[in-house]
Length: 180
Image (cartoon, rainbow, N blue to C red):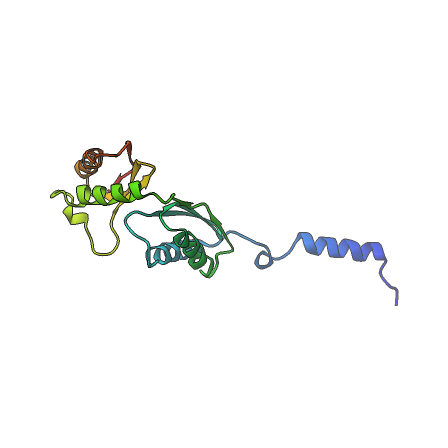
């Protein structure tokens, strides 16, 4: 019986490494898996116990990787968000780009006044839901950003006018999206 030459063995190993079966290669998740990851990320984030109207957490799912974005008022919320997303089956990497807003008594007072101005408006009171508020109020050094979803352009404009009417606000950026 004749033994194979070492050159042929090396070529065989190289050939098998180049042509691994699809199950052994890292591939993009199926559509169903991607949708499941997307849904679970959203669910886990909205279930965070200290996630409030003054926090905004967004995310992007790219294959098995999740990028967290947004602004929060508490550092623990940033780490909690990363922790719950890391535990989701199928998530391989979490890139946590959430900004922790600086502690500021002035911003805290503005947040309260903005909340009353926006959610106290008769035309916007229907958005004052008990758990997840659809209009997020982000305050950073006196600058306000409105995030979230409203039913129509009029509501978006009312929220903007109400926020601009609060004394002590330097600027308002209205990123509210009108649902279709």
